Image (cartoon, rainbow, N blue to C red; front, side):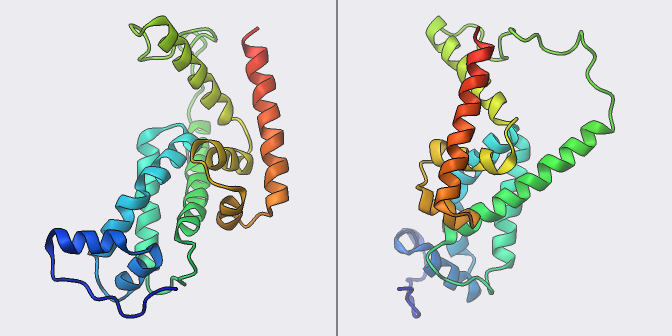
Length: 208
């Protein structure tokens, strides 16, 4: 139950602690009332998940951060119309998915307008990913496996990719993913199962 009359002290560490103890919906009610400090608490609370999600969806850190900034700007602009139903995280993820899709399509269109990378400039299929040289062998192999997984993840359709990221990288339940995506849990489970099979087959073929 969202509190209708939240009383806070004027400022300082006690106020920050009070804000940290409030639910997402309670913080959004304060934001709708004209306060911005509660929104900073919301950003701190959800930024890591959203950046990780966008990073894995897009495969590009800077673009992911720009997308997440846009997500929070949207949430702030919609604070007065937000309906407190205990699903603020799902609300953010839904915005993030749409922003990620739009960013990916803009990037694809931009790439299409430029000439393709020349064959001698393209990375070799078995080349080592940048940044792993100098690591102990076991860590280097693990980094390479992770890099291959993320490359293959980017080739999946957007909805399957999103579901896999939320389920296995961020540990959301199928009910939570359903709340964020509007898809039924049965549909999500089938989608995730197919996505895992596809990844397994592609990674197995690549390692031969």
